[in-house]
Every structure is written in structure tokens, then in C-alpha cells.
View 1: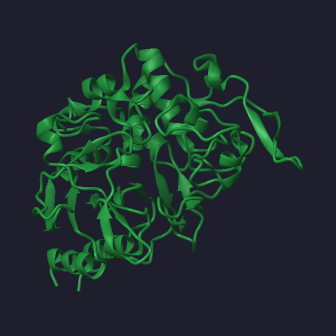
View 2: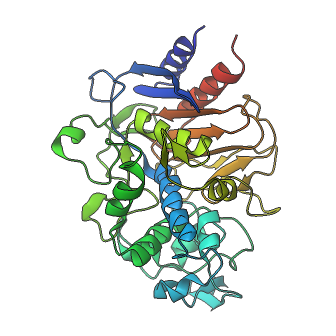
Length: 380
């Protein structure tokens, strides 16, 4: 089968409304696959907009590294000197017989490197039961309160996926003097020609937005109107989750990484900074495993359970070739609405796969991702 036929068959078999997939290399986009519909019955198109959710993290990480290059942010300085809310972190040690959280001071300060590598000790409530339990009351998504949490462990001692990149976005704002959406538009998406990538949608872009769907316990899908990142009206611009965009735009970002920080003559980062971002920064710690406290939102997932994945300054790194053919040293991450990407520096390929449904790690969606990778690396 062709790659288009492979993905279309996987989308149908997984009861996914539709998808846009794209493969590119350092020089160009190689192939675009569009299949199915947007969730509202209209046909999926190459310029359909998607909530990228945590695929925002890689872009925010690049923004921070631009400021590191300029000497305005430091990877290993205490970030609490810049962001006072992180100045005196407390670590969860347990809960008393009445359920009250027990805390102690952290052994060391949180740094930007900890935030970029998800080793600060901060998680997500929907992933880490202890973090949600430690809160005195439920918090609203998109609120500053949702970012303020005790730590699951001392900074640098483990890996836990969480709110770290939202704090990175706040650090970018603090040193640049710009709101994060404006900074990213001025310094990343604008220069790269990513005109369809943004935190807040105007009417024209909203009309192109795929409908977010929710899979019920019976397997049926229904519309689920949720603004994952909170948009530009939330209490903070969500550097960890707020962007919407298209496959073509995100491919331009991925190709910039593949090309060592530049694309079509536009330099976004130095080759040295890209090298730092794309090498494992967490030693022997294991990245990529996530539990769940909210299975309607996200199922548990463990990327590459047969190996010990690393983490760079914004990317998961598989140290060995995967079962579906993704080569060792590739970079990747995803968004909670089942959007996925990978960057393969060794063979010079990048892939992006955009769907729009919950929960994250939906088996049908993961089957589409696996079929996509096999179609690229193990063609029949």
C-alpha cells in the first residue's frame, strides 16, 4: 500500500474522524496525507487547524534557548530569582491521617534546565495523584493557581511530565518584556512563515478548526468543546499547551530543527543551541512514562517501554531504534488531543501527525501513529 492508503486504512480501523500527516526532510516537504473529516462532517483539508496542545512545548523551549544565547536567561541559575513563585520550592513527603499534605524544603533550587527537561519535580494533576491530592482545593485550568504546586521530588532527581514549560513561558515573558504570544510571533513563527500558528484564533482560523471529539466508554465519539490552552484570555499564555496550527506550519518548525536552527536563510537558533536541545540532558533518568488520574482525558502511556528514553531541552529521545522503525536518537513529543511529531536527525526526516480527539493515547490514534512510522521506515 502507499503511505496514503496505509494511513487512511489505520484511521478507518481506529474509528478516527480524520487526520493530516506530513513527512519532510531538510530540503522540502516530501508528502502530505489528508484523510477523513474534521469531526463535524466536513472534509479534512491540508490547511485544517488543530489544537496542538503540548506540541507547543518545543516551540516555547526554542524561545527560551534564544534568550539563553543572548545571555538573558541562564540554564543553571536559580529560576526563583526571576520567578519568585518558584523561589522556595517544597517537596511532598506524604499525607497525615487527615489527608493534609506534609512538606519539606527542596534540596536545591529549580533551574531553567530543570524546567526544560521536566526534572523540576512539578507534574500535572491529571498524571500525578499526589500532586492533585496536595492541593487544598480544586483549581481551574488556565489559572495561575494551576501552576503553583509542591514538588513530587527534589529538582534533578527524577523525571515527571508537568507544568514546567508554562513556567518557561513566564520566564520568557519576564526577560523579554513581551507577552509570550507576541514574543513567539516576532521571533519564531513570524520569521519561519508559520502564519497559521497562534495562541488565539480569529474568525477565519476558527472556521478551519477541527472539532475536538471525546471517545466514550462505548467507543462512540461526540463533540467535546474544550479550549485546551485557554487561549489569550486565560490568566497566562500557556507555553506548555496553548498553540493551534496546521501540519504545514509545524513541519516548517521541525525542518528548522533538522537544519540546525535555520530554514530558508532565516536563523532561529545557533547550531550549538540545537545540539544542546537535541542531546540527552537527564543522564540515566528515564523519561516518557505517564500515569493518569483522569482516564477520560488521558490514558496511561509509556513511550518505548523496552528502553530508557532520555530527554533533551524540549524533546523525548529514543536511544535505540523503535519497533516501528524510528531510528535511535530521534526527537519527539505529542499533544493531548492526539497530535504527534518526530524529528530524525540521522536520516534527515521529520514527521507530523495531527488528529483531534480525547483521551490522549487513544489506542486507535496510537495505531495510526505506528502505521505512519512503519509506512515511512518499513514500506511494504
